[in-house]
Length: 223
Image (cartoon, rainbow, N blue to C red; front, side, top):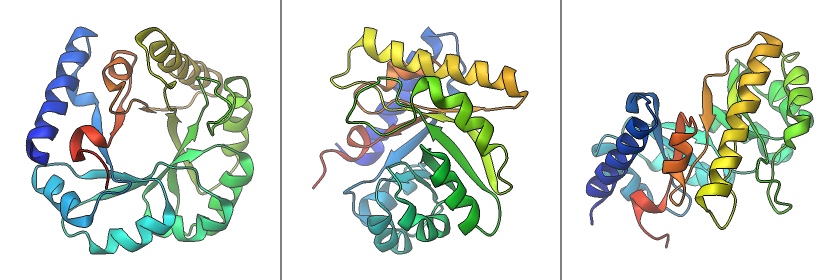
């Protein structure tokens, strides 16, 4: 199956899940997760109408992004080490994986103009995952709001593994509830919930995702 056909299939599934949840499918952006995907296949996705992409590693993004022709917006979606921040802020328009104040402060220091960020929350509470603990999220938000060049736009999470409807939806619902509570407490707008991947994106859509990060369902198996 070609990338165009795969992307169309994902769009149809998003639409179906959104309508089932009483949502407008146009509220949900599809991000192509391009870890291990070559520039040619990314360009194929651009021609098929996908313009938002995410990379997990700064080193791979640094090599690959300059090779991609066509209109593309790039987000950092993997764990970001502080020693890679200087390069990351030049490559990406959004950092989705801020999981500590130290990282947020480093981004604030390195960026010239304000940059959009999401706070990554470990809503599945799995020890192998990055992300701030749910109960520590409000505190991190409060500290990030003191930084001049950080534009906090929302929250991000990875669903539990292995995925199941009950556990996945619980983790995604927790992110939405956290976002709602934080908006009310600090009187701010956090429009973005980045959650859901190839295995679980329909459940994420049903729980309020506004960005879903799709790799395999668009690009096929990685090399």
